[in-house]
Length: 248
Image 1 (tube, rainbow, N blue to C red):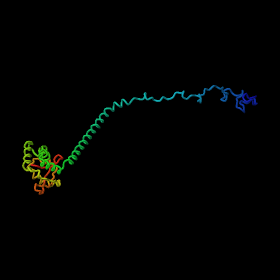
Image 2 (image 1 turned 30 degrees about the vertical axis):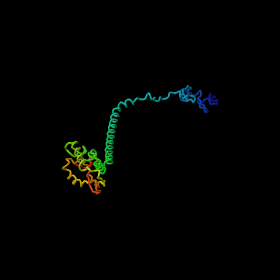
Image 3 (image 1 turned 90 degrees about the vertical axis):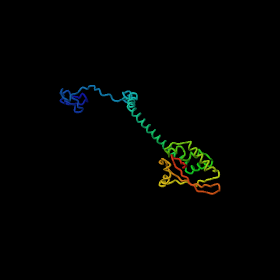
């Protein structure tokens, strides 16, 4: 007997080819080694290099216009808080600016006053006013200044009485004032413990001495018509940042 598969010569009693294993006609019909008819098996398609990958469906990326629109909702929720804190910031900013402006004004006024006004300058202006017969300057730079007078005294300011008094001084004591000359020597700012003596001298004349910020003694040299020199002293009070010569 010859094998139908490989053509090898077999014994008539062989059930399988000892070369290729092909069953012979003697092989049992129901044996597990019976020839199985080949069937078409549909294998999964293999990836072909020629296939365009872009043709296959791709996962979709979210587009900006399809994203959840959260900004409007957040804006609605946060707007009241933003407005509240913005108002608070602006309010505190305005307060800080106002405080800084006040400090600058106060400091600047104090500095300007200290530059413009001093005990020496005040006495110089008053004595020049006496020599030149300028009553207005005498009133402005002495304790007969309306504002200073009202600070120091409880009674009302009588402008007419003050003018008449200054005119009498100019006509009487300084009638021959053009024959006198003066020189401001120096000024001394008194210490706090020296105030008591000055206050005792003026407390009966002035009703309010709490407005006095500082006291200075100004030393002068007066030269009379004969050329004789005389030492003189004048006191000045600092009120509201400016110096005024005591005069009564």
